[in-house]
Structures are given as C-alpha cells and as structure tokens.
Amino acid sequence: MITLPQHQLELHRFVLYEIPNKEIKSILDCGCGRGIWGYLIREKFFEKTIYLVGVDLHKPYLEFCKKYRVYDDLVNADISALPFRQKSFDIVIGIEVIEHIPKEKGASFLEVIESIAKKKVIITTPNGYKAQGAFNYTNTENHRSGWQTHDFKKRNYRVHGIGIRLSHLCDNLKTFWWLTWSLYYILTPLAYIVPQIGDTLLAIKTFPNKLNDFNK
Image (cartoon, rainbow, N blue to C red; front, side, top):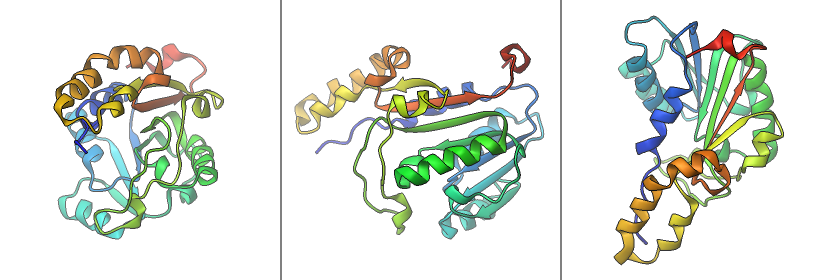
C-alpha cells in the first residue's frame, strides 16, 4: 500500500482563505489536537490580537498546546457537548474532526457549533467514510462516520472539494505513485467546483444576512 498525498499540504490554504482578515476577534478550534491550526491562524493574524480557544478530548494534546502557548485558553471536552454560550465566537472551525464521532453525534456537533458561531462555521472531513484506526495512543483518532456533500448542503453549507477521490484506484499500484500524486493536485480545481469527486470536503456556513458585510 502506498502512501497517498496528504491533503494537509493543500488544505491549509483553502481553510485560511475562508477566515476573513476583517472584523474577527475570536476563533474556536474544535478538536485542536497538537495545535497546527492554532499556529496557522496565529501566523495569519500576526499583526492582530485574536482570542483563540482550543478544544480537545485527548489531554496529552492539550498539554502539548499549553506547553507551547498556542491558544489563549484550552478546554478538555467532547466536541459534541461543547460548554460555550450561543454566539460566543466569531468563527468556529472543525478541521478533520467530525468523522471521529458517530453520525448522530456529528449532527449534534453541527447544531451546537452553528449556535456558538456569530459569523462562520468551517468544517473539513474526508468525502465519504475512510477507515482509520487509533494512533498517537488514543482511540479518539478512530474514524466513526462518513460525510458527503449532501449532508452539509441540506444544512445550507457551501461545499467544495479538495484533491480527487479517483486517486484511491492507484493504492495497490506502487509503480504509479506519481500519477496518484499528480491527479490529487491537478484535479483539485475541478473538485473545488464539483465537490462530489473531491477527496476532502470543505464545508462553510456563513451567518450574516448580507454577505457584503463580511468581506475578507
């Protein structure tokens, strides 16, 4: 089995593009892990003060983030039962986390973060179910559900694709690893427009009544 191109190599620029530079004072990172998105957000807003909170169920991840002072505050909690008031953060992100909880809990997670966010919710997840077991000594990394474009569109999310699902056809053909890699990047512009063929889904829900009031 070859190692497929890692979506994180491309994912960060799509997610950061969806985080506007204006009128943002607070961001909640659900399932923050070791804080990669905290670092990326800090870099984007290096000239601006942003109140950044990380949430994770795995305490060693939170200890790591605390050591390196990635976030202003850290919360040990299940993402499907977040202890925050309604409209308490400008933006809520859940990057590669919703697939780690059962589908019914995932629906509850979306309801909760939609109530917490003032301006925007940003979610990424594999397109469909992809098996993944535990690693980093935690079962929280298991994949327990699969999500598709229609799951988000019925909740009024704008959905884009990143990468290409066809790449999995080359999994057992080590000779063609270069084709797998190339397809992933070359076809991302098409997947962005037609998310059903994407390897990873990027789902965004914006709350202002007038989109022009929330320019990047």
